[in-house]
Structure formats: structure tokens, C-alpha cells
Length: 311
Picture 1 (tube, helix red, strand yellow):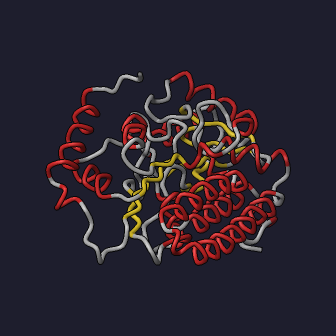
Picture 2: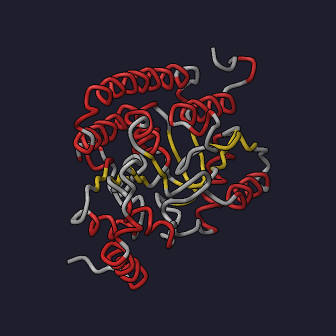
């Protein structure tokens, strides 16, 4: 059996006590919608698009939050306890919280949507599957199945929403490919704070380099920074990118290391990696986030006279 660290043992004990002792407070009133709790916003976007009229969707991790480092709060415990369905990424995206979800799976419907992707399409240890939009459709399928099982009386509506959302993502995948083709093969080099874009790179033909590894738990060492700076200067990469959920100082240190080698690299813009934008904004939707990223990347890596935004 997988060992659970002490803080998470306490979390589980608290959860069980709240379920057994505070049942009256934890259960939803009969006239309230069932609660669907997700971890990251990308999964919440699926649930809202498929069943938002019939459930209350809550994402534990909001804009700018790094899921690799996230620790559950007492409020999160209450939300998980009240949930009728829990949807999370899996593939170690949520770090040690994965132990919590495995335990909750014996108590209520709990689905790791990314783990529906066939293993032959996965990079070992890399959970950032949503940046290959065609792969993310597997996660949509897993969430759809769970939502229909939760709400069989609304199956027809959920199925119709699924078809609409699925079509939107197919179009989104085509848009990313179309935009990427505006760059030559030599221009398709994406350098970011951590390796969150390997699936993106494979799907859309980019070479991807990150200062950190797949997880942001460990920081990039001086050697990593200097090696990457040398690569940028040698290949004259025009831009590097910051991420909304990773500290800015990391990319700034890389920028300075490149400049010390006599090459002026610019900050090409801010990309969304492990979290979406603010709720209510365009980037606060999965479609808007993905479009923002590819527009930002292409706009920074292509000569300005060669490309017009959005065309």
C-alpha cells in the first residue's frame, strides 16, 4: 500500500470525521445542484461546458496556482466532502494530493481524466497533456462518461453539449496547427520556465526547452541556466517566455545570462501552463487560454513583418 505523508493522513482523518459526524452540514440541500469538484481550471472548463446547467462546478486551483506545489486547505476538505463527483488530472499532476484522491475513490465517484489517454501517447512522468488538444479529447470523454453516470436524467442534454464542445476543440486543434505553420521549422523553438510544453511541441512541431523539469518542485540550477543561455545565444532564439504559475525571477535570470553572452533575447510574453486566466476573461476558458498561447508564441518568434495577428 502506498504510504501517505502525515499532513495528508490528517487531511483524510478530517475528511472522514466531517463525513461521519457533520453529515447534516456536509450534504447538499435537496434543492441544490450536485457539486462537481475539479483540481485545475482546464478540467472545470470541461465540466461546465458539458453539465454546467445541472451541477455546481468548483475548481480548487485558480489562476496562477501551481498544481505541483498545491496543498489542500480545510476549505478544500469541505468541498471534497460535499462533492458528488471529483474530477482531477492524475499522472502525478497534483503531487501528493493524488494519494487523497485514491482514497476518496473508495467513497465517491473520483476520476483521473488524463489517465484515460492511451499510455502509448504519454511521456513518462509528464501530466501536461492538455497542450496537445487532440489528446485532451480523451479527458473530455472520461469526464463526459462520469457526468452522464452522475446525471442519467440529463443524458440527452449532456450528450448534446459534449458534441458541441468536442467540435470546438477539434477546431481549436486545427487553429493551433494553422498558426504554428506560420513559423519555419527553424523558428519553432519554445523556451519556457519549465517543461510543461512537451506535448505541445510533439503535436505542433516545436522544439521545447525548459529551465526546470516537468515539475516545478525543484528549481533550475546555475548549470541549467548557463547551458540554456549558451543555446539561445548560439541559435539566436529571439524570445523566451514566462509562465503565469512560475516565478518571474527564473526567466529573468536566463534573460540576463543570455545578455551576458552578447545576445539580446526578449521576453516574448506570458504563457498559461498549469493554470488558466482569471474567471470571466477570455483566457479563463480552455479555448481562450490555448489561443492566447499560440498567438503569443507565433507573434514573438516570427518577424513582425511576416505575420499579422489572428489571420
